[in-house]
Image (cartoon, rainbow, N blue to C red; front, side, top):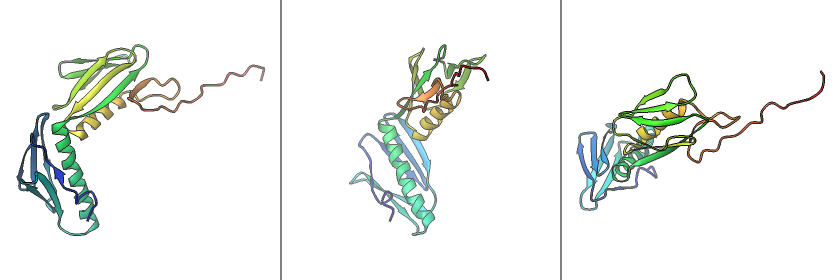
Length: 187
């Protein structure tokens, strides 16, 4: 058995879940999520122990991989609806800033125009410090959406290796390069 897949997923008291066929709906204080599970994977909910057990159809390599993946996705869903996930980003650069206008994130990144990004439904963006270094937090119950939207934001101006300007994750180390060496003398 998969070491991850065979572990039961504990369901807290403040989380409601329903299983309809191969669709799992989870609702908690931070939001609600839905996951369609592969037909070869079975989900069993034990109400007395408040645990979810995941079973697979066979011991094929493909089913073993799906077994662990499904268990990890369900565990992340439960964590997301109870605690929420978040990623912190820093925008470093002179004149670079960020602000939230309605349902859009507006970034000034040194281009001739501001960059407008529509914030996906279920994701919350907080700008704690709007100017250099601008700090923003992307949070929400869906771990995949939080990571994806953070990557989209970072992709608009990745950090460059010479001055370190751009958008980076908080705590990310940028490998710096030395600039051009000045040599004096006639050639």
